Image (cartoon, rainbow, N blue to C red):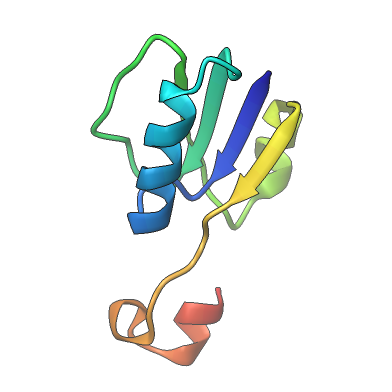
Length: 85
């Protein structure tokens, strides 16, 4: 199976990536992230994308299962508007 993860650099996303890479059920794990991952693995495919322009990378969103790990705290984002974005 092919897994898609949006937002794999945070605490939840990192844990999910680790679990999926260790699971033989998944032959490919595609991560869509704002910044490069500090991880390499034969099953891992990292796509650095701009979340403000999803149409630019929408053609990459084909898989069997999708996970969203997007999120941040207000303190990290700096404002409610930035946190929502």
